[in-house]
Length: 132
Image (tube, rainbow, N blue to C red; front, side):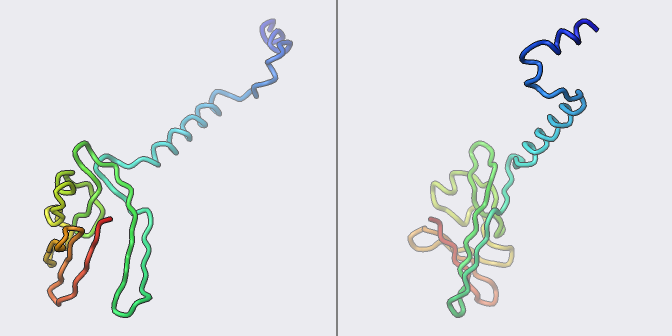
C-alpha cells in the first residue's frame, strides 16, 4: 500500500494514463495487424489505380498503376495481362515478349523501337502496350 501512495505523490505520475495491461496488449496487436496488412507478400503485385479513356471512337486507352513486392533479381512487369514480378534482365534487354504479357490465345510481337509490345487476338483485334 505504501508504494501506491508514493506513486500518487510523484509529479510525473499523472502524465501517463493508468490503463490495464490488456488495453496495451490490444493496442499493440492492433498496430501490428495494421502494419502487416499493408505489406505485400514477396513476389506478388496488386493494382492500385486503373483509368480508362474511351473518348476516341474504336479506341480505349487504359492506364494502370501496380504496387509490387518483388524478390531480388526481379522487377515489376506483366504476365498473362496481369501485373507480376519478372526477371529484371527481360526489362533491361527490352525483350518484352519473354515475360509472356499476352493471354494464352494471343500472339505477342515487339514494337519496332522496342518501346512496348502488341497482343494480337485470333479475331484480329490488337492491343498495344507501351512502356514509359
